[in-house]
Image 1 (tube, one colour):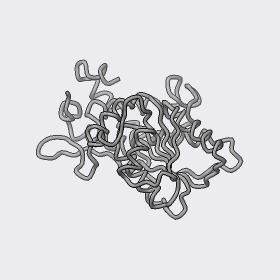
Image 2: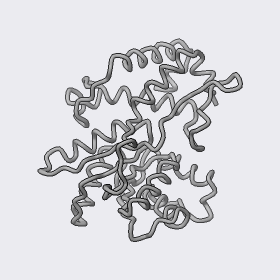
Image 3: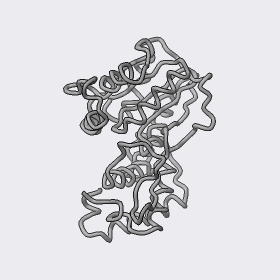
Image 4: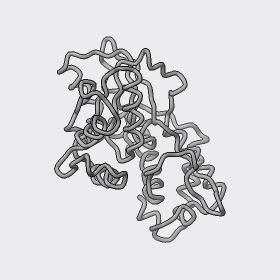
Length: 266
């Protein structure tokens, strides 16, 4: 398994990766008022810390927690994280969706009252997280005004614009608040590059972090190959600041110089 030292190599690359991570992990925590929140949505991912914090916010706000996640690309990784965190004695992950697995933990281990839990168990990607969440709320006759959306920090920006697109034709769309629960960052500690000490446990392996980062930047682009209106049309236009674009190109160039690594990551 590659380390961050193998991939990142220089302080300049660490800076570039951190800038992209902060761009992707859109964080509205400074303006979230739990007293005004009437729904927390957690989009299924493999970082258990995001689900635990989403649960804590729903408890604090006294509002429903909607867990969105069927069986998708991250399901196996989520179930591995459940075992690594010691929840296997509480949760049966075999043949269970992401929402069901996390829901069991939320009630049994994190103290969420079961009546606050809503499960959406069919979505397999960000687009379906948004569309199926809207369908579930309509099915339940719910029209929340202020929704906090929680996702893997690397997919937070794309998830937010996807939710906004899903409600774009609504006469009274809710206000969405973006909360990745933490913003990832790399630091040099004891002569090696690693995650900042303030971050939660159970984070991405180095190769997966860089692969997700580069993949997200490619998807966000409004080009023929991207997810924007001029491409696949999954998301609205996203403006990528020149500074972030420069960081992205720098990381791409650096990885391209590492024999075999770019192919493995992309």
